[in-house]
Image (cartoon, rainbow, N blue to C red; front, side, top):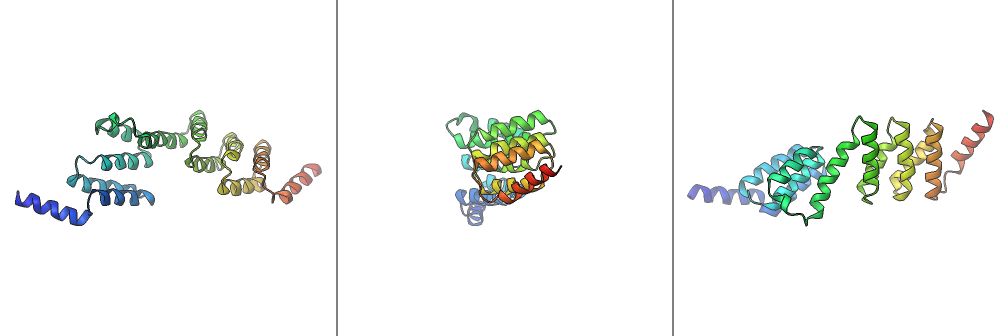
Length: 202
């Protein structure tokens, strides 16, 4: 019993309590250090095996690391499944599935993932739109351009302006022009003039 008490006292001194342990895991997630987050979770779990907060942040770590199936299985087994009134946790699981689907080799899955992210009205959809604006698939680039005005994010505008100058596929460029117009971007007159002049000369 004495050694158990000493271990717990040492653990609290090292980890600074349950909340500090959770914050430490969040810090690893912030810099996308998923290996560090998992290690921090395993260490904290020895001190707080029943902590619901630790279990939730571990689900988040798995989902963000693209291990959505593992995250869902852990969610079911850990007793968190009964906590259906935690929309943030359910949202984390859903975004884990969407993120993995985004990287699928199947075009239909990619498209469904992008559309699902778009309709969430969540800032995380911006990252997915940016990713698809750089897709090797012209249809995905065109769709991402078409959906971008809904968010009007500065990074999206800059990427669309880059595509306006560099995009070679005409139907994609047309969606880019329409998107920038819908966003009321003023400083695209010069590249537009060049496109028009080039079109007239060919």
